[in-house]
Length: 79
Image (cartoon, rainbow, N blue to C red; front, side):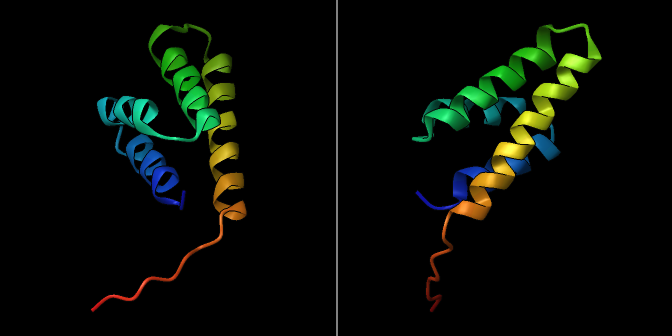
């Protein structure tokens, strides 16, 4: 699959682009990433307890970090 979805997720979270993050959640082929994004967005919009929001954010970041480390980087030539 590559690292594009994971990089996009980090970028969208950093820029607070929730609409794009929601689209990524729907379009990604990584079911676990989709579920982590779903839990994160739900916590950000509906949860009042900051510890729950922090836990969901940390869980998503840990998964993205793990996925980026585990995914081999494919070198592409640019002409």
